[in-house]
Structures are given as structure tokens and as C-alpha cells.
Picture 1: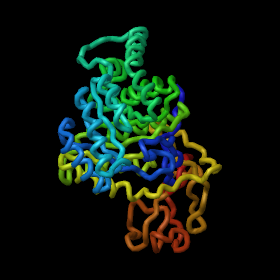
Picture 2: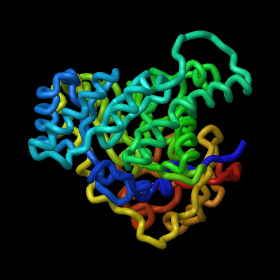
Picture 3: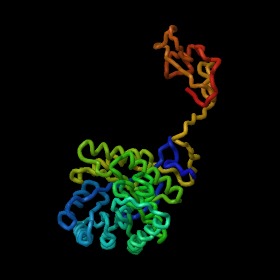
Picture 4: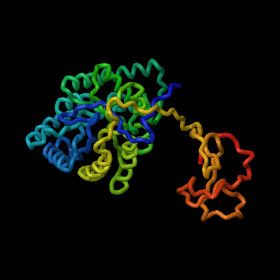
Length: 390
């Protein structure tokens, strides 16, 4: 089995993942742009005045992209009036994203009016009937071709209009086809996204943003990390939208959202974020801004600077770290194949111990300079060779 690249370049030096820059209206996502904060309207989409008002409230709070649900064609048609209302109110540069489920026709209508459309690969064209079906390779490919036929018109229209698309995978709504082959897993989530990426790339369309959302932060983090490795192996680095679905409200919701989003930001992963709370969406903005602030401006690796060599570590196989031999107290060798040595500070050591340490030191922070000298190990003659240190 081929080894995937790691999801981060350096485990010890923080570097933000350098992704492809995608334009969403007048706003840049990815590349060297700062992390973008998003939220989502909770008003009925066909209530144009209420939706425009909430979009303005979000923008005034610091939201940079507003997502609006469009479950049907009439909702998608209302986006034209919402866009016009925002333009008239002086918010022409506020990008809107339509959220589409189940309805390719709604997506085709929405792409005419907003700067970005999010589709869920699990239900955009695939079935979700909870049937136990064993797909042969031929059946699987036939279903995938049918999905491509339904997604391709949206890709082509987005390309014509200069719009962006978000491939928004949700752990809770993977298609039957993907579930039967990959299970309810991060691998299935990533495969679902990669299928839609391949369809878009076949039309030379790369204004893509990708998300791997789950209500379980552990699943969400694992899926994004696997996606980063798959994209690097594929030779692309699309910008990533981070979020934990159904995070909840109050402190619990904030902690749950921060646990998933923060873990990935610490990896250098993520170009735009939304903290989903079951509250007024305006309350999401300060939480997201606080998470993003730590990583603004992003310290990228300078152009032309080579990445350090990647470590290919197997988390399921134990392997000791290789270290050079050094001598503590000028006598006790550690590292370089020695059994790990036991050191103890002088103030907690007495000579009556049945298991004396290898070395007693006056100050645990000054291992070499303040050593009183080595204490012979009882098993000194039976030290086995292994890689390790203290």
C-alpha cells in the first residue's frame, strides 16, 4: 500500500498550509489571505427583508461571507432579491453562499445570483435510502457517472460566471453508494469529496473550497487531515472551510467548536471557519474571530525555501527515536542504543532505596553540570541495546 504524504510538513515548526487562492466575489480564500470568518442566516430565505437585515447584522459584527439556505427553487429565486437588497444597502462587497441539498435545479438557479454555492456530495445527486446494497465496480462506476451528469452543468455555469463552489461533505449524510464501500468513516468522507473534485477538474474548474464536517470533533479532525494528505498526493491544495456541525449553544457549543477547529488550525490547516451555535448567528462571530486571531497574519514559508524532509511514521508500529550518545555527569552514557536512564533530584533521593537511580543530581533542571556522580545500576551488566535516551 502506498504511503500518503503527511498532513503537515513539519511536526515541530508551525506553518500554515499554503492552499490555492480562490476568489469569492471580491474576497480571497486561501493562498496568503487571512483566515475568513463565516456564518449562516437563520431567517426564512423567502422572507427577503428579514434575511437582508440579518446579513447586515452579521457583516457589521465581522462576518465576511454569509451562507443562506436554499432548499428549493423558490428559495434560490429569492436570493436575487436578497442580493439586490444588500447592494442597495451598501453591502455590494459582502459575498453570499447558497446552501443546497437534494436539488440540482435549486443550485442552477442560485449560481445566477450569489458568489458561491455549497453542494453536499452525499445528497446532491446520490440516493440516501438506507438500503443494504453491494455495489460491483461496474455498478459503482455507473452511479458515479450519473452523479457527474447532474453535477457537471453546475460546474460549467460556475465557470462561465466566475463563481466558486464548495464541496461540503457531511459525516451524517454520506450516500448509500459511499457508505456501502467505505462505511461511516473519514475515508468515506474524503472519497466523497474527491469524486466531486475529479468531476470539476475534468472541466478545468478549480475555484473549489472543500469541507469535511461532522458533529464529532474527532471524526472531523481525522477527515480533514486525511483530506490534506489525499490532496497533496493528488497534487492540489484547495482551500478548506472548517466547522463542527451541531456544536450546540453556550459554553459547551463554544468548546466543542473550538476543539475541532482549533486542533486543525494548530496543524496549519484551514482557510475559512464557522463556529456553529444554536443561538443568534451574530454570537458565532466573536468566537470565530477569537479562534482565527491567533493565526493572523499567517507565517508562510518563504518562496523558494524547501520544506524539511518528511517523516514517514506508522502510528501503529512502535519505533524508538534515534539519538546520539551523550554522557551525563561526565560518566553516565545515555542515548544511542542505551536503555533509558533514570535520573532523580538529590532532595528526594536517599541511599536506602532498593531501586536506586542511575544518576543523582542537585537540580533536575541542570542534569549535567550539578551531578553528584553516577550511582551504579543493579542491572548494569545486563543493559540491552535499544534506541533511546532519558
